[in-house]
Image (cartoon, rainbow, N blue to C red):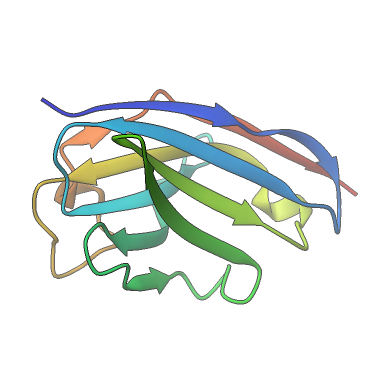
Length: 124
């Protein structure tokens, strides 16, 4: 069983930075961050392969967000460092993981395990 527990998020002014973290227990092969605004579909933000560290990003966040993972003292942590935040980045963010790596990394069906979500609010 894989469990994901998120932390971080909050409110920041446009141009500011935030860091999201997700504590991951269990074995995973790919992990990702998604976001979902009210009434919209969940959008893939970034994905990282647990072992190789290879990454993919949505065009909307390339150059501004960085996904990473660290493994210290048998604790795997998934992170999303967000820079140059814009008001349109405001929404709920979710970490996700699976024991495989889907061909289409940005589709939510490729991930069986999800965090509880954390709110990011960017004011103009």
